[in-house]
Length: 494
Picture 1 (cartoon, rainbow, N blue to C red):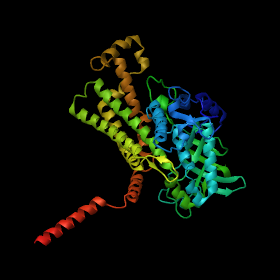
Picture 2: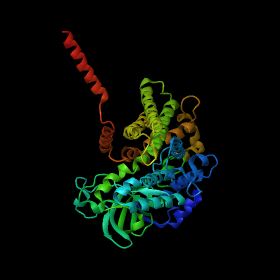
Picture 3: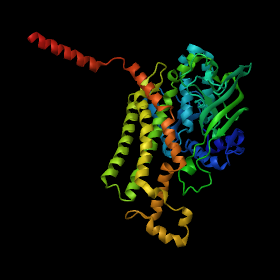
């Protein structure tokens, strides 16, 4: 099949029949559901970009294996140029969505690609798992599928391991083995965009303890697999509000869902890891699953720059960017953007070649970005709120602006500094409010804080990994050595 079109993606959604619930309703028509139809169009536009001559050669390539054109998300980088080819895909799609859609199809496709390029891990545990991963990678590549993932256990009792929970299958686990596969029961979260995807992949984060064997799972199944239920959170918008009044929330809402597995059959050929605590704890670190940090960094940079530009333009529109306190806030945001841009560039320039021949960005700068964004992005939103102040919540609707008897008042009292019309300023303020004040915008803040897991735990993991790479302290040792040498010199002279 090769690369998909937007129409082919939408047609697949019409064919799929997942068990989706939202707001007390079972959603039976995914494509025409008010809460899903505009985000579906946005994803379809990304697929269509693969066929646009303006983008095709930079975001897709001809597969050496099949001779068909495939997304760059499915290539295993072997050198710097390959790495930049994947980045072209990340940045092109991120720019198209202003960095606001965190789980576009490239995200998990590169994740599976990284798993499929790590046979040495699976050889240590079960070579059949690798065969399953490799075949699955080919399947989603050749059909250009869109995946969601669910990695986190429900927040029942975080003080206890999976096997210690009061409810045996509060966390997703294996109930039994059959000749066809394993039967799984329980729940996982947080599956972003799940109702509008083709498949879901589950894989474990480190932290399993002896006794957690049946909860140590990695597999993938179609999103409409019998027994799989999607319980969506309350939408941040109703899908009916005018795009003119809600230019971001109406387009880029990413529905999130908890996935409930009611004795779901996972065929053996779809099982990538099972019943092995050691394998579960090592999977993330040894298979390159963290390679999606490159995509996250590119997308995060675009999103932060977008917020920074909104803050700067609001300040300019009302003439406050000449005030020192406003300049320092805007300067802080620019420095955050430039810091992340520099770190991203360093990670790419200092790329490494793994033992399997895969080219990967230097992980230290990427992990540093992952530590900065959960603080820098909420700060950018705070600056928009501070500079925009009451102006963010007062603009009239576009329906008001169409009323002739209100037009004169709106033109007089909503205009900005010289040369900025009321219409231009109202549009800008609505954009700023969508990003900083609406529930949609607050969900984006929460996303940046936790999209990669608990930031405190991640920072601890980052330091431990850094310490493993930096096993000595040469500058300290040299300083101590020179101090000793200087002391000895003084003592000998005395």
